[in-house]
Image (cartoon, rainbow, N blue to C red; front, side):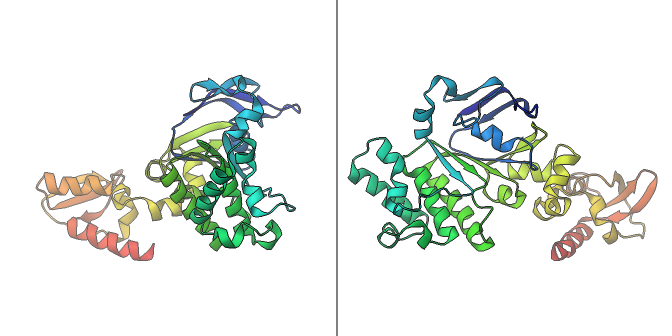
Length: 320
């Protein structure tokens, strides 16, 4: 488990990058930190392996402050994948991937076995690629090697700083899928920084939304889609994306106004247009009433019943 306790970071030029941030990252989950450029997400992540140091506050890993551990030893226990990959061009793929295991003094057989296994996980044939050099690989292949290198020393924590943002869409999607699969299989704690909301929603167990050095909301992808805490989070996710991804039951009746019937249907209950679809259906089932008169303030918008709701949902889903 990783815990940030009242973290503040002020740079020498006076920029306050983080403002009293407290956050707990659960073990064995893929946690995405997202927000606009300059919100402090990368600065926060870099404090886990002490590439950045707080002006005040403490960072804990498994109950110990990171400052109580030698920085070099700490970094040997934390995998790190960055956008620029950082492979050494004069070293073979095998040597690049073996760096941390070698620093840890692993036997050669153990190191090779670990790398061989990881190469297979990221979809690269070790017999074909381990002898190659970075410049012989595509960008997507190099980034896969970056993931292998980060995992080679069997760290419990892996930090990933916008690792796929420079890749083409196909390679990016493949690596997102593979990263999620690897995390589920190896049970690592992955802290993943991105500015891409679609990427966050696709891979995350938990999403941390930041703005101006502070945390706006923490939640699962489903929680953010269905219950954005404020207009910033809603707009950052995107209203269209929310409408596409959230469950039908969490949408409101007012989103289906064009499908309402205008002829009076008795008996009916009067409801506000802001109620959720699931609430409207519950009323129709539990109250024994076949129709709802939907109003917005004093304005009558029309009548709905279960048949109208179903037709509206199906029609709108085709559009979405």
